Image (cartoon, rainbow, N blue to C red; front, side, top):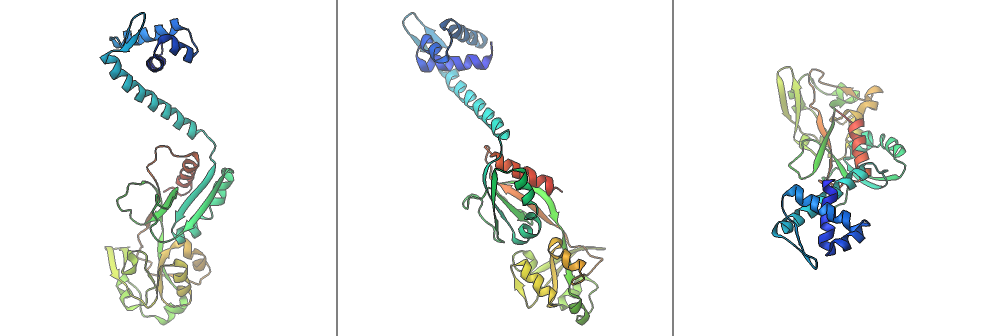
Length: 294
Protein backbone atom coordinates (compact mmCIF):
# COMPACT_ATOMS: atom_id res chain seq x y z
CA UNK A 1 0.00 0.00 0.00
CA UNK A 2 0.99 3.63 -0.53
CA UNK A 3 3.05 4.77 2.47
CA UNK A 4 1.59 8.30 2.42
CA UNK A 5 -1.98 6.97 2.40
CA UNK A 6 -1.18 4.77 5.38
CA UNK A 7 0.32 7.75 7.21
CA UNK A 8 -2.80 9.82 6.55
CA UNK A 9 -4.95 6.99 7.86
CA UNK A 10 -2.79 6.65 10.98
CA UNK A 11 -3.11 10.36 11.76
CA UNK A 12 -6.87 10.22 11.23
CA UNK A 13 -7.14 7.20 13.60
CA UNK A 14 -5.21 9.05 16.30
CA UNK A 15 -7.30 12.20 15.96
CA UNK A 16 -10.64 10.42 15.58
CA UNK A 17 -10.01 8.18 18.60
CA UNK A 18 -11.01 4.84 17.05
CA UNK A 19 -10.50 2.93 13.83
CA UNK A 20 -14.23 2.88 13.11
CA UNK A 21 -14.57 6.66 13.59
CA UNK A 22 -11.57 7.25 11.33
CA UNK A 23 -13.04 4.92 8.72
CA UNK A 24 -16.28 6.92 8.70
CA UNK A 25 -14.38 10.18 8.23
CA UNK A 26 -12.30 8.67 5.44
CA UNK A 27 -15.32 7.17 3.74
CA UNK A 28 -13.93 3.64 3.72
CA UNK A 29 -14.44 0.38 5.59
CA UNK A 30 -13.08 -0.31 9.07
CA UNK A 31 -11.35 -3.40 7.63
CA UNK A 32 -9.37 -1.32 5.09
CA UNK A 33 -8.55 1.30 7.73
CA UNK A 34 -7.22 -1.33 10.12
CA UNK A 35 -5.26 -2.98 7.32
CA UNK A 36 -3.56 0.33 6.44
CA UNK A 37 -2.54 0.78 10.08
CA UNK A 38 -1.12 -2.75 10.29
CA UNK A 39 0.75 -2.28 6.99
CA UNK A 40 2.35 0.92 8.31
CA UNK A 41 3.36 -0.74 11.59
CA UNK A 42 4.80 -3.71 9.71
CA UNK A 43 6.87 -1.47 7.43
CA UNK A 44 8.24 0.45 10.44
CA UNK A 45 8.77 -2.66 12.56
CA UNK A 46 7.07 -1.17 15.61
CA UNK A 47 3.59 -0.97 17.10
CA UNK A 48 2.20 2.54 16.85
CA UNK A 49 -1.15 2.09 18.55
CA UNK A 50 -1.87 -0.28 21.43
CA UNK A 51 -5.32 -1.73 20.77
CA UNK A 52 -7.79 -3.66 22.92
CA UNK A 53 -11.44 -4.46 22.29
CA UNK A 54 -12.47 -1.38 24.28
CA UNK A 55 -9.73 1.19 23.83
CA UNK A 56 -6.66 2.29 21.92
CA UNK A 57 -3.66 4.40 22.92
CA UNK A 58 -0.48 5.60 21.28
CA UNK A 59 2.73 3.81 22.14
CA UNK A 60 5.90 5.82 22.76
CA UNK A 61 6.94 5.12 19.16
CA UNK A 62 3.45 6.08 18.05
CA UNK A 63 3.75 9.48 19.77
CA UNK A 64 7.07 10.18 18.03
CA UNK A 65 5.84 9.03 14.64
CA UNK A 66 2.56 10.97 14.92
CA UNK A 67 4.35 14.30 15.45
CA UNK A 68 6.77 13.72 12.56
CA UNK A 69 4.07 12.36 10.24
CA UNK A 70 1.95 15.50 10.71
CA UNK A 71 4.93 17.65 9.65
CA UNK A 72 5.69 15.47 6.64
CA UNK A 73 2.11 15.52 5.39
CA UNK A 74 1.81 19.27 5.97
CA UNK A 75 4.96 19.88 3.92
CA UNK A 76 3.65 17.54 1.23
CA UNK A 77 0.43 19.53 1.08
CA UNK A 78 2.37 22.79 0.88
CA UNK A 79 4.49 21.40 -1.97
CA UNK A 80 1.34 20.37 -3.85
CA UNK A 81 -0.13 23.86 -3.31
CA UNK A 82 3.05 25.46 -4.67
CA UNK A 83 2.85 23.35 -7.81
CA UNK A 84 -0.81 24.32 -8.21
CA UNK A 85 0.12 27.99 -7.88
CA UNK A 86 2.80 27.77 -10.57
CA UNK A 87 0.17 26.41 -12.93
CA UNK A 88 -2.39 29.03 -11.97
CA UNK A 89 -3.25 32.03 -14.16
CA UNK A 90 -1.41 35.20 -13.01
CA UNK A 91 -3.89 37.75 -11.69
CA UNK A 92 -4.01 40.69 -9.30
CA UNK A 93 -1.95 43.85 -8.79
CA UNK A 94 1.84 44.11 -9.05
CA UNK A 95 3.62 47.00 -7.36
CA UNK A 96 7.06 47.63 -8.89
CA UNK A 97 9.79 50.19 -8.12
CA UNK A 98 12.60 51.23 -10.47
CA UNK A 99 15.16 54.05 -10.80
CA UNK A 100 13.79 56.93 -12.83
CA UNK A 101 15.95 56.64 -15.95
CA UNK A 102 15.90 52.84 -16.15
CA UNK A 103 12.18 52.78 -15.49
CA UNK A 104 11.26 55.43 -18.05
CA UNK A 105 13.83 54.69 -20.76
CA UNK A 106 14.12 50.89 -20.61
CA UNK A 107 11.45 49.20 -18.50
CA UNK A 108 8.33 51.18 -19.39
CA UNK A 109 8.49 50.33 -23.10
CA UNK A 110 8.38 46.59 -22.31
CA UNK A 111 5.55 46.63 -19.79
CA UNK A 112 2.70 46.81 -22.35
CA UNK A 113 3.93 43.48 -23.75
CA UNK A 114 3.89 41.92 -20.28
CA UNK A 115 0.36 43.20 -19.60
CA UNK A 116 -0.80 41.91 -22.98
CA UNK A 117 0.56 38.46 -22.11
CA UNK A 118 -1.11 38.59 -18.68
CA UNK A 119 -4.53 40.24 -19.14
CA UNK A 120 -5.65 39.62 -15.56
CA UNK A 121 -2.68 41.45 -14.02
CA UNK A 122 -2.58 45.19 -13.31
CA UNK A 123 0.71 46.95 -12.61
CA UNK A 124 1.76 50.02 -10.64
CA UNK A 125 5.21 51.36 -11.57
CA UNK A 126 6.81 53.75 -9.06
CA UNK A 127 9.91 55.62 -10.26
CA UNK A 128 12.40 56.94 -7.71
CA UNK A 129 16.16 57.20 -7.37
CA UNK A 130 16.05 56.56 -3.64
CA UNK A 131 16.56 53.05 -2.24
CA UNK A 132 13.03 51.98 -1.37
CA UNK A 133 12.24 49.37 1.28
CA UNK A 134 10.60 46.51 -0.59
CA UNK A 135 8.92 45.00 2.47
CA UNK A 136 7.89 48.14 4.36
CA UNK A 137 6.58 49.88 1.22
CA UNK A 138 4.83 46.74 -0.01
CA UNK A 139 6.57 46.38 -3.36
CA UNK A 140 6.47 43.02 -5.11
CA UNK A 141 9.77 43.66 -6.90
CA UNK A 142 12.33 46.44 -7.19
CA UNK A 143 15.01 47.17 -9.78
CA UNK A 144 18.44 48.35 -8.68
CA UNK A 145 21.40 49.61 -10.72
CA UNK A 146 24.98 49.49 -9.48
CA UNK A 147 26.64 47.08 -7.07
CA UNK A 148 24.26 45.50 -4.57
CA UNK A 149 24.87 45.76 -0.82
CA UNK A 150 24.35 42.71 1.37
CA UNK A 151 20.64 42.00 1.49
CA UNK A 152 18.07 39.44 2.60
CA UNK A 153 16.36 39.79 -0.78
CA UNK A 154 16.60 37.44 -3.73
CA UNK A 155 18.31 39.06 -6.75
CA UNK A 156 18.19 38.15 -10.44
CA UNK A 157 20.97 39.65 -12.56
CA UNK A 158 19.80 41.36 -15.76
CA UNK A 159 21.70 42.83 -18.71
CA UNK A 160 24.09 45.54 -17.44
CA UNK A 161 23.45 49.20 -18.13
CA UNK A 162 25.70 50.62 -20.88
CA UNK A 163 27.20 53.94 -19.74
CA UNK A 164 28.68 56.54 -22.11
CA UNK A 165 30.21 60.01 -21.92
CA UNK A 166 29.07 62.82 -24.21
CA UNK A 167 28.93 66.55 -24.72
CA UNK A 168 27.08 68.94 -27.02
CA UNK A 169 28.97 70.16 -30.12
CA UNK A 170 28.59 73.73 -28.83
CA UNK A 171 30.43 72.85 -25.62
CA UNK A 172 33.21 71.00 -27.45
CA UNK A 173 33.83 73.96 -29.80
CA UNK A 174 34.46 76.22 -26.81
CA UNK A 175 36.20 73.75 -24.50
CA UNK A 176 39.88 72.96 -24.24
CA UNK A 177 41.56 69.73 -25.32
CA UNK A 178 39.93 66.47 -24.29
CA UNK A 179 42.05 63.47 -25.25
CA UNK A 180 42.40 61.47 -22.01
CA UNK A 181 40.24 61.19 -18.87
CA UNK A 182 42.66 63.33 -16.84
CA UNK A 183 41.69 66.28 -19.06
CA UNK A 184 38.26 66.22 -17.40
CA UNK A 185 39.78 67.98 -14.39
CA UNK A 186 39.82 71.17 -16.46
CA UNK A 187 36.25 70.78 -17.76
CA UNK A 188 32.74 71.36 -16.53
CA UNK A 189 31.32 67.96 -15.64
CA UNK A 190 27.59 67.58 -15.09
CA UNK A 191 27.28 65.79 -11.76
CA UNK A 192 24.72 63.08 -11.01
CA UNK A 193 24.44 63.20 -7.23
CA UNK A 194 22.70 59.87 -6.68
CA UNK A 195 25.71 57.54 -7.12
CA UNK A 196 29.47 57.47 -6.63
CA UNK A 197 29.69 59.32 -9.97
CA UNK A 198 29.12 62.50 -8.01
CA UNK A 199 32.81 62.59 -7.05
CA UNK A 200 34.70 60.46 -9.57
CA UNK A 201 34.33 58.96 -13.02
CA UNK A 202 35.92 55.63 -13.87
CA UNK A 203 37.20 54.52 -17.28
CA UNK A 204 38.77 51.43 -18.77
CA UNK A 205 41.55 52.37 -21.18
CA UNK A 206 44.59 50.98 -22.98
CA UNK A 207 46.58 50.99 -19.75
CA UNK A 208 43.83 49.65 -17.49
CA UNK A 209 41.37 51.36 -15.17
CA UNK A 210 41.53 55.11 -14.67
CA UNK A 211 39.70 57.03 -11.93
CA UNK A 212 39.32 60.79 -12.31
CA UNK A 213 37.89 63.23 -9.72
CA UNK A 214 35.21 65.42 -11.30
CA UNK A 215 33.66 68.77 -10.44
CA UNK A 216 31.11 71.04 -12.06
CA UNK A 217 28.78 73.96 -11.53
CA UNK A 218 25.61 71.93 -12.12
CA UNK A 219 24.52 68.97 -9.99
CA UNK A 220 21.23 67.06 -9.84
CA UNK A 221 19.77 63.70 -8.88
CA UNK A 222 17.66 63.59 -12.05
CA UNK A 223 19.08 62.20 -15.30
CA UNK A 224 16.62 64.05 -17.53
CA UNK A 225 17.62 67.37 -15.98
CA UNK A 226 21.25 66.42 -16.51
CA UNK A 227 20.53 65.67 -20.17
CA UNK A 228 18.84 69.05 -20.64
CA UNK A 229 21.92 70.75 -19.21
CA UNK A 230 24.20 68.81 -21.55
CA UNK A 231 22.07 69.69 -24.60
CA UNK A 232 22.31 73.38 -23.69
CA UNK A 233 26.10 73.14 -23.79
CA UNK A 234 26.64 73.44 -20.05
CA UNK A 235 29.14 70.59 -19.74
CA UNK A 236 30.05 66.91 -20.12
CA UNK A 237 27.57 64.17 -19.19
CA UNK A 238 28.10 60.54 -18.20
CA UNK A 239 24.81 58.65 -18.23
CA UNK A 240 23.20 55.46 -19.60
CA UNK A 241 23.15 55.06 -23.37
CA UNK A 242 19.34 54.58 -23.59
CA UNK A 243 18.86 58.08 -22.18
CA UNK A 244 21.06 59.72 -24.81
CA UNK A 245 20.80 57.47 -27.88
CA UNK A 246 18.24 59.67 -29.68
CA UNK A 247 20.29 62.83 -29.09
CA UNK A 248 23.45 61.11 -30.33
CA UNK A 249 21.72 59.88 -33.48
CA UNK A 250 20.45 63.42 -34.15
CA UNK A 251 23.91 64.93 -33.65
CA UNK A 252 22.86 66.99 -30.66
CA UNK A 253 25.34 65.07 -28.47
CA UNK A 254 28.75 63.66 -29.41
CA UNK A 255 30.55 60.77 -27.76
CA UNK A 256 33.99 61.71 -26.48
CA UNK A 257 37.13 59.90 -25.30
CA UNK A 258 36.67 57.06 -27.85
CA UNK A 259 39.73 55.16 -26.59
CA UNK A 260 38.19 54.81 -23.11
CA UNK A 261 35.17 52.76 -22.11
CA UNK A 262 32.92 53.61 -19.17
CA UNK A 263 32.28 50.40 -17.15
CA UNK A 264 28.71 49.15 -17.40
CA UNK A 265 26.54 49.32 -14.31
CA UNK A 266 25.00 46.05 -13.03
CA UNK A 267 21.19 45.80 -13.05
CA UNK A 268 19.18 43.45 -10.82
CA UNK A 269 15.54 42.78 -10.06
CA UNK A 270 14.97 41.95 -6.39
CA UNK A 271 12.11 40.32 -4.51
CA UNK A 272 11.48 39.01 -1.02
CA UNK A 273 12.51 35.54 0.14
CA UNK A 274 8.96 34.23 0.07
CA UNK A 275 8.60 30.53 -0.67
CA UNK A 276 4.98 31.07 -1.73
CA UNK A 277 5.72 33.25 -4.77
CA UNK A 278 2.49 34.28 -6.44
CA UNK A 279 1.87 33.38 -10.09
CA UNK A 280 1.80 37.08 -11.04
CA UNK A 281 5.21 37.77 -9.46
CA UNK A 282 6.69 34.61 -10.95
CA UNK A 283 5.40 35.60 -14.39
CA UNK A 284 6.91 39.08 -14.02
CA UNK A 285 10.33 37.81 -12.88
CA UNK A 286 10.38 35.31 -15.75
CA UNK A 287 9.42 38.07 -18.19
CA UNK A 288 12.23 40.33 -16.96
CA UNK A 289 14.90 37.64 -17.13
CA UNK A 290 13.79 36.84 -20.68
CA UNK A 291 13.60 40.40 -22.00
CA UNK A 292 16.49 41.92 -20.06
CA UNK A 293 18.81 38.91 -20.02
CA UNK A 294 22.56 39.34 -20.05
